[in-house]
Every structure is written in structure tokens, then in C-alpha cells.
Length: 450
Image 1 (tube, rainbow, N blue to C red):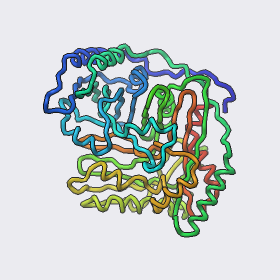
Image 2: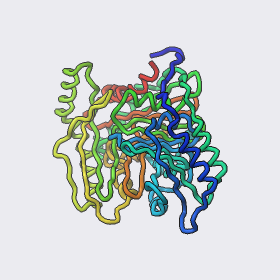
Image 3: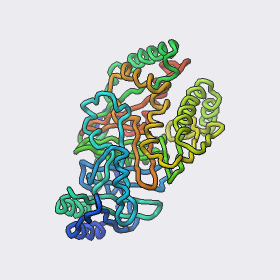
Image 4: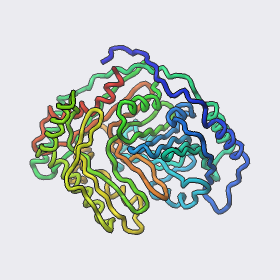
């Protein structure tokens, strides 16, 4: 752990400005564009040569940037500004007016507990749950496209100026301020009290599982660049969904999460249960033994089955057919490994992304079981508002959706980074073991401070 604020450069690809000409051409088109009377918005798009989306986003105007990359690495979206915002579900009417080129893709970020009174630190993040970016750079497999979205409210001169600023870009290296971990406050003692209280409710019979979360705070010697932080996280964890939600200069929520809430392609939906955890081993033998102990653990299998059961029940009412893995597999990440079970459904006609999110979120993997009783208990036991942590985050469109669960994540406020981690409490849980589990999940952020 660093005791000071060591400066370290983050090197992005020194690629030529591959989107420069496309951005300047789009700026001219924006100034000349006229929105047809029968459309709520217009999409102007042009293909560009392959480029690094995070590099491009770092040079874009900050304050309202969004980013998402799926776990398969086949889809990636970087957005700047807000052309329109809506609730999830309301976006679907807009998506029927896709304009030219690819269908419009909306960026989604919802709070974990929509009924909880928002903490002051989260208020700004929950004002725009579903956003259509003003400027978008999108990659689908190897095809890249730069696009803009115009509405009747768009200030064309301002948007054209933004495009020209994007064209100028930013090619210098970033010198990142070092991170220093701050004291955990009540730390493990407070955590142990909360775990024992949760176990008491489980023994009373009102709960079968409760997922408790904690935070860890880091400070830096200067303002943090959210895109640079995400790039460093991603370099250490190659597997996972990557996301960034920026809500004003110096305010961002980001992470690299292993957990899918739901993916939809046409009428095929895929979800999964991810629960039960072990650290990675120091070598291949230790890693294998830890994985085998996880697969053989009655406590972890019981915790995992609660999630499988909930996902199955959530989808069955929306499905014409349902397929569930017979046995869980190991999902191995950089610092931890999990039990994972895949679920696939053929959806009934008329089922929407909103229906799927309402049915699936939150799963027992991030809340507990039964879910409604667990959420009520979390309002009692957790001394902070989770905000977007453990909420749905991803992208939705007319043709499909990819929505992850925003765990392994952190909120940035100026020079402060607050990281989140949780652990599932079931009968047989030991407070010290669960504290260590959350520590393993925080390792990605610990490595940023070393």
C-alpha cells in the first residue's frame, strides 16, 4: 500500500486521430440538418476506421460521458452528452424512429433500491436512468461508426462545436495522482455486528439470505480521471462488463463486473446466477484446489441455488421455453472465482426489456432471499445508500439489450474514490470469513493504490 501520492503515467494508444475527419464531416451535416416532421429524433452516422474507444472518450468533453463494453468484447459504446433521456420502457417508442444506419442504443443505469431515499452523493446519478447520447462512437465486432442524435431541442451550433472539439481530441499521456486508502471507520467490528444481526433474522425464519455490502474510500493528490481509472481496472481484469456513467464534471460511477442481469437478442433472453466465492490461488495447484472446494461447499451451493431458483421463477412467466444448466460451473476472474449457472429463455411475444428488468432485479446474488424482505433488512443494516451500486447497468435497443449488475464498482467524486463490495450471508456464515471475501473483491481497487 502506498503511503504517498506517487505520480504514474497511464499510456493510451498513440493512434492517429482516426475519427477526426468523420467528426468534422458530421459537424457540417449537423449544422445543415432539418428534423423531419414525422420523427422525434434523427440519427446521422458515418463509418470510421477502427480506433480505441476509451482513448477517444478520454479526449471528449467531460461531464456527461458514458461507456459500456460487453463481456464477449463484441459490442462497445462510448457516448458524450445527452440528446434525450427517459425511463426504461419509454425509450422503446423512440427506438421505432431509428433514422438511418444502426438502431439507436440507449445507455441504462438504475439504482439498486429505487424506493430508498437517495443519499446526497447519488442524487445527480439517478436523474437520467436511460440516456440517448448526443455523440456516439460504437463498435460492433470490428465495425466502427461515429454518430450523432438530434431532437427538436438540440442546439445545433453547440453540438457542432462539440464535434469539432472531439475531432481535435487529446493525445497526451495522463499523469494520474496516486491513491491512498483511508481508514475503514468502524471497519470489521461494525461489519461483524451487521453479520450477526443478519444471522439472527435468518434463524428467526424471516430471511434465508442477506447480501451485506461495505465501502472502502481512497483519496488522491489531485482530481481523478474516470476514463483513466476504468482503463487501469480493465487492464487488470480482462473478463467482465466494463461501464462508466459520468454525471457532471468530476462525478462518475464505473467498474468491471462479472455478472449479467439479462441479455436479449430478439426474443431470446439469457441470464445467469453468480454466487459463491473463493479467491484465486497463488499457483495453478492452489487455484484448482480452491475451485474444487467451492464446488464441494454445501454452504456455497445452498447460497448459489437460491439465486438459480429466483432467476428461474422470474423468467418462467415471460417464457415459452426455459433452459437451465444442470450444474454450476466455475467463473474465474482475476482475483476471485464464483459459481455460475446459465439460464436461457425464449420470450413470449410482447415481453419488453422493462418487463425483464422488473422480473429479475434485484437477484438474491446482490440482495438476498426472499428479495422483498432482504431489501427491507438492508435499509436497516447498511448505513449508506447503495445508489447505482449493484443496480442494472448496460445498453438497450430495438433489437436487443445487454444489462449487467453493477458490482465490482466505485464512485468517483473529484479526488475521492469510494469502492463497494458485498458478501452473501446465509446460515453457517462466519463474519471474519465474509469480511475476507469482501477484501478479495476489493483487490482490483487495492491494486490501483500500489
